[in-house]
Image (tube, rainbow, N blue to C red):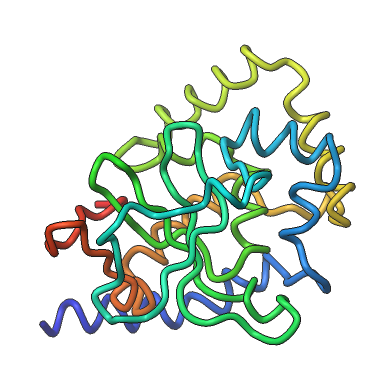
Length: 210
């Protein structure tokens, strides 16, 4: 227990510094993920995050948070995995985008990805292959990133154009190392403990990040 508390405290103290590299964007981002074709092409085709059809955003019956807080799906992956906000939204939608974001996999895994949609957007822009990150070494992750670029030689250009369409300066996006370190911090931090997802049978889903 003491070790767990120390880990949570460490993550909490590190969080402000990490967030400083990922400043919040003024205004609502979610509508922009479906309004610009270059943004849609990048997030759907490369980052595997599709927010274009709200009618598809329905969690499997029985999937819920252990805390009883609201779990609101707002996007899906091609596999059917879900991107969800945690808790109630704020006035006008902006406050809603500042909620924690949890990923719920059909393979029985779930985990905290970001503290707000702006942070998730930056993760997807910088490391669209983030799903391969858990358990991999730095060298293996570099190989994954290189493979992405071999398959998509124009990946960086498409990322930069999508970022600009979202009102973000590509030059100030965080590094791959920073966003992956942030995933690790969040998975061990105090917010993750409040985002435990239960499956249809009432059992906790496996952690997305070990």
